Amino acid sequence: MWEKIILQDLVPKKFDFETEIDADGPTTITYTWLRSDGATAPENSITFEEAGTKKVTTSWTLGGSGESYEGYWQQLKIISPEEIFSNKAEFNLYCESEENVELVSLSPDSPSTLFVGERVEFTFNYITSEAAGVRIFGRPMTDGSPTPGYAAHGSPLHATGEGSSNGYFTIQENSQHVDQIRFQMWDADQSNLLYEFFVDVDYQYLAHRVVLDNLEPGTNSTLVEGERVNFDFHYKTNEPGGVRIFGRPFTNGSPTPGYKAHLSGIHPVGEGNGSGYFTVSIAETITPHVVDQIRFQMWDANQNNLLYEYFVNVDYVFTE
Image (tube, rainbow, N blue to C red):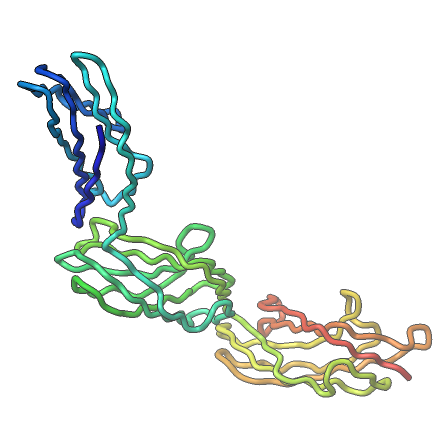
């Protein structure tokens, strides 16, 4: 007795099973087919007029749902005149979806810090066998849910076959972190989800931002008492009344003793540039003194609300 499996080149996959039954004289043999999913075929009989060999066949079609199957088998069972089992004909079936979306590019690259309203733009390739076409969406996600305050592209109807397209999203709320982009392919009327995958990213959205552009002298410098550290920065804000921006020296997590620093005018809403300075007056009991950070803060015009803060690591030594 032997088994042969034939895998057809169609989707879904049809598995054909064939085996030979040997008889050493006239007899009638009753048999059935057993399957790994627990199903049993109806009993059949085959009659031998004399000794010989006859073939029996069955088939099993799988894969219509797009699922994959591992460790499946089919087996012949002789019921009479005596109970005999053939070897199990084992097989695996791995189904690849005919629907697919592949990310091609992201701009800006991840990780990035973005201003509220700035777009993340992307391009993608797709393939589909959906005759009526598909719609494809890329949406920002945070901790497994859609990011609060997002706005994103709509989707045209992408024709069946292969193609390329693009999209975007942005965030309208402050201090949101996007950790994934979810891509989904839906049928034309968006009633059936055909394909979904996630891309890990790191985008931080801020409504206010200050970025240091230049330090003079450069960090890792020794200065005398009263000598200035000058800096330039650029900023963005959506605060309607404008903002005030300060840079202050820090030592071991606290403001540096004896420092003096610039004041701030009102920087208008939108984006712009500014500058400032600080210096340190050294008391005899604390000479020399090290500045290990500069703290930048953005406040509203009345200095009632802190809008943004960040620290820059430096190494300035002030001596007499």
